[in-house]
Length: 167
Image 1 (cartoon, rainbow, N blue to C red):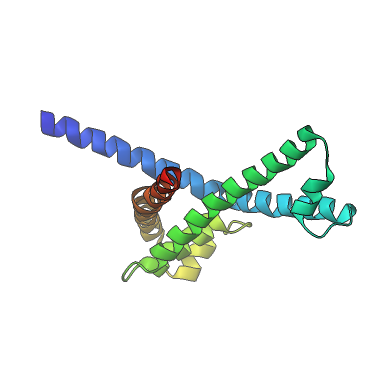
Image 2 (cartoon, rainbow, N blue to C red; image 1 turned 90 degrees about the vertical axis):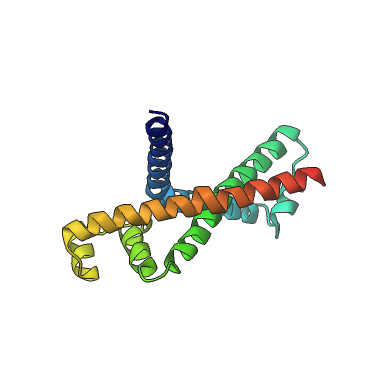
């Protein structure tokens, strides 16, 4: 009985990580859009004041409230960019997975990563795979990506932050 409970807990955890990874995939294009949009807004605002850098722009303001708001926006942008970097690194690792990595990446790219989503029929034709293969391989790809993100990349980032705290 203990073996069954342990398997169920592990299965529940894997299921949760799978769904968290799927959510990240769905949010990826929106986060990219948000980052691009924020950078454009900041650049436009900086150029309105005739300054050459964001630091110069921040220094213009004497008011602590305005300065902290700008810094907060930049910090949010930094966090979003960090998430995208983790995902991009994970996609690179996924692509290099032996034999099926490129297929895994292609399915995820066409299904989630592009701004304009491809129709399922286009993906099937473009990759020359059957519908059942598409769904099976897509699930395998998300599971592998989940392992890469939550088991490899995120722990590296956490260790990096912990190492920086000790300095």
